[in-house]
Amino acid sequence: MGKYFTADQWANFIVKETADSGRKVFNDSKFQELAKVKYLDNEERDRIFNEIQVTGIVYSMIFTEQKRKYLNENRANLWLEVVEKIPEAFYIWLSELKIASKYVDIWKKLINLRLKEYQEGMIEMKNIFEKDLVNEPNEKIKEFFYSLQTVALGGTLHITRGKVTPNDSLKNHMMTWLGVLHADLTKKIN
Image (cartoon, rainbow, N blue to C red; front, side, top):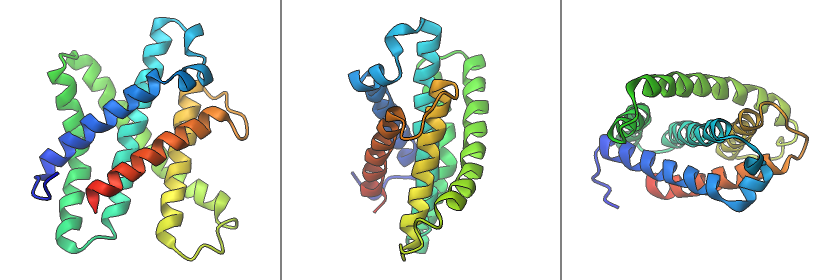
């Protein structure tokens, strides 16, 4: 992977990798079991697939934005551009897949909605876990933890239409997936 990729190339690459990762999660037998996908009609399955895609794209944006703050100025500027270009790269890719523009418009609204929702949720998550993490001196670790928790919980709530229990196995599965996505993005950004 060249460090000489443009912001557009990085955004396109991240979108396709994230979407492929989301597809694999959706097709994973454990996910299918936890989300009870086999009992759902096609429309509901499609909705869940779309929620996974949105969850992955939004997490990629949030994580990349967080990670870039810890880079030198030149690299931070590149990754800020990447964050800004990820949504558009996703919409262009959907168009290349021949997704009708009315559906691409729905994706745009959904991504913007989820991004705002999860950004606000991270503040709430910080308030919930701040006392538990008082002995963690690394603010970067705390910040990543809050975003991972927020997006995993939010994605799970949307997938299940709000039916989540404490220590929900599906949420834990989503955390594992986003943790893998986190590690993959870290390698690319570093």
